[in-house]
Length: 87
Image (cartoon, rainbow, N blue to C red):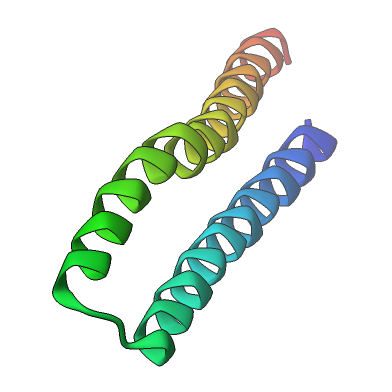
């Protein structure tokens, strides 16, 4: 039972790291856009492009990260309930 808890903690930490990496990627992109300092039309075009790519990549990455976390936590909970009842 203890190994299940350890695995779930490791997966949660991995999810946190993945979320931070996605956030850093977005921050890096925004910083690059600020440094370029283009016209209003270019900023609007980048904004629309960012919305499309963010939905396509970032949300998909985060969805997979947290789907895996939920699955692992569910399995650990079921294991704890099963082993807790049988002991």
